[in-house]
Image (cartoon, rainbow, N blue to C red; front, top):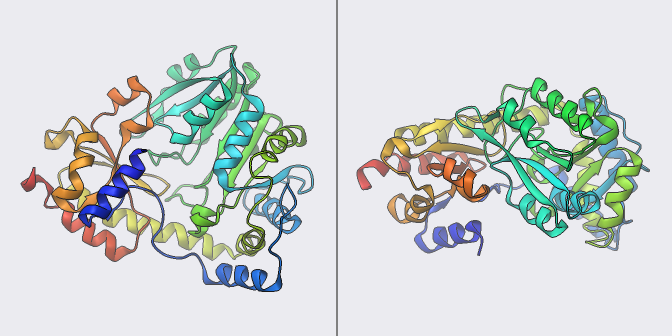
Length: 376
């Protein structure tokens, strides 16, 4: 059982508000949902092409050009995947082999370690430390080696909420060039940043020829259950990932793919609005977490806020996470589960909360959390 299943089960049994797993409790935009219904009704319910509907591949290419000035060829440089998770898996399995190293930041999204293990590669990490969760550049450089086949870069970063500045991203590109590493970027929170713009790695000098960019519709449109993602990059890298992808799901979600194409064409005000709304929710929850006595590390992006439990005299966030639903009726995820043993020790007092919920739910959670210190 994963920690997500455990915390969700605890939330259900205790009636707690589940701020553990990062899924919204509101539907995505009505026009996208209506588009899916229309496509289903029209009979477009069979297999999509293995690399995705042309309509969506063209929409992804247009999105990259509209927001970032990038211009991937929708025919040879874009593939639609079953969520970003499949795109990451297909890319890692295409390029990482036994004896290779894959470098990620730590804490890291749990699927990274699993797929690196499936590939038979070695998972190497560079630490991100509170309060800003930005890498120590000397430690980052030391984590590279002649065996670094892939750098898997998640930005905006989960679970920390950090958004890496251009200077950090450019240094990663320079190191990847030095060691002839492929860069795989997980950019699913690209539109969910607060007061700071997202910088796609592929647009940086020296990056385009070695970078696969991955994103998805789930977080941007609050449609996580549709599992529609995409990857883009140089034709030869994309072809290698597509070769693996065809033996994972081959294709999926035909009507959802068509509907997401419509979503990517929504006006700029929509994309600005979702970030502004999420920032307000971040602030509601953060106020409750401060009232609870935690040190709160305000994120620059994503769905998540991290806190340090140490000011309350707690040094084991895993233990607190298991007690929290019964104590105050709120569930969270301990950050050490996103780390290797050494990183888990370094982050052992950190706890992560999701704020991608209705404002009223977050206000209720904030009120419950404010009572924590008196119940410990």
